[in-house]
Amino acid sequence: KNQVEQSPQSLIILEGKNCTLQCNYTVSPFSNLRWYKQDTGRGPVSLTIMTFSENTKSNGRYTATLDADTKQSSLHITASQLSDSASYICVVSRNTDKLIFGTGTRLQVFP
Amino acid sequence: DSGVTQTPKHLITATGQRVTLRCSPRSGDLSVYWYQQSLDQGLQFLIHYYNGEERAKGNILERFSAQQFPDLHSELNLSSLELGDSALYFCASSVATYTGELFFGEGSRLTVL
Image 1 (tube, rainbow over the protein chains, first blue to last red):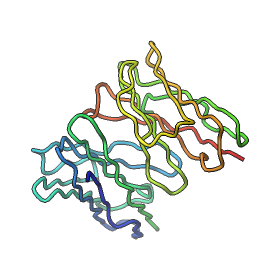
Image 2 (tube, one colour):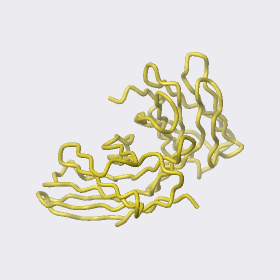
Image 3 (cartoon, chains in turn red, yellow):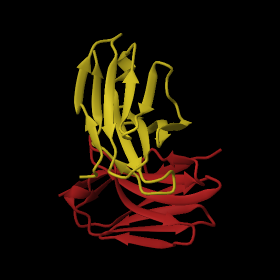
Image 4 (cartoon, rainbow over the protein chains, first blue to last red):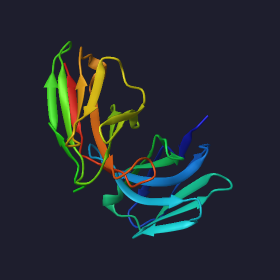
């Protein structure tokens, strides 16, 4: 069954700290993996897209990794800011016919 | 600004009523996707259109329907509304299909009383 599971469900960190969010998937055949940031009540915004051959991709303080062998991805946030408080959604594209969404990790950054 | 426009931003209506949500994709994007997000839930895929044709259906209720017009804008029609239909409805667009970048609108918040 094609599934995307994210952990943890929620996370609280202090401003300035780093954190890592996890995404495990069982989607096959795999096309690409995306990370989105969704502020409360707003539309998701793309952070990264990675294909099978890409291991790491960065977007500012956000760095995504992909291990296609173990079907795992992580999103690392460096030096967190209050504006990083949001839900982070992992989405896997199954070949060319479907996008499978994870349920997201809710991150709260406190001063 | 993603370039995807959704109207209305907010809508309050009563049970049993019918509403239409509208989405204008980014210029040049042929694909339009609709998603439903209930309070504190993940995004649920409803339906995908590509260049005017329905490409895929997700968990879309029979009371819901959609279409994509020749100018590529799309409408999502929700009828016989129930309290449980209260949610954020997002539209997203992309140039092609599932391999490309997806751009989301800001959503239409539907409240059914």
